[in-house]
Amino acid sequence: VFVRRLVVQAILGIHPHERVTPQPVRISFAMATDTRPAAESEDIAKAVDYARAAERVTALTRNGQFQLAETLAEHIAALLLAEFACDRVRVEVEKPDALADAESVGVSIERRRRATPGG
Image (cartoon, rainbow, N blue to C red):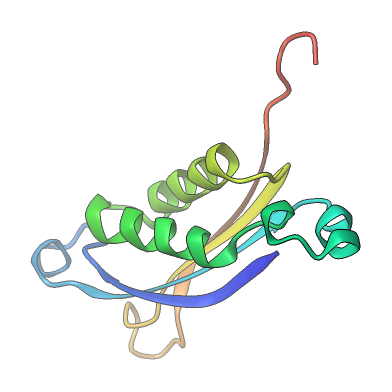
């Protein structure tokens, strides 16, 4: 289940102008999950709610005022793993306006749910 190129206006960066003026932040994420139960039953309750995930990621990004894209990506990964039925997530955070001669700059991470003791 994925969301690609979600654009959020947010404070993200270390430079003085980035700390006061929101800029577009482009976020993509994918949540690895078994989709068979939802597909077989067509029961939305058995599916990962990508709209809710996008809302949660948007709120985190807008309210976080992070300095580093790496920090934002880690927080997004932790949120998705904690709140949604997924075993692994891939998160990309891009700043499309960071470099004049580049389409965007950013970071891409992949994180797994940690195994629980005895499980």
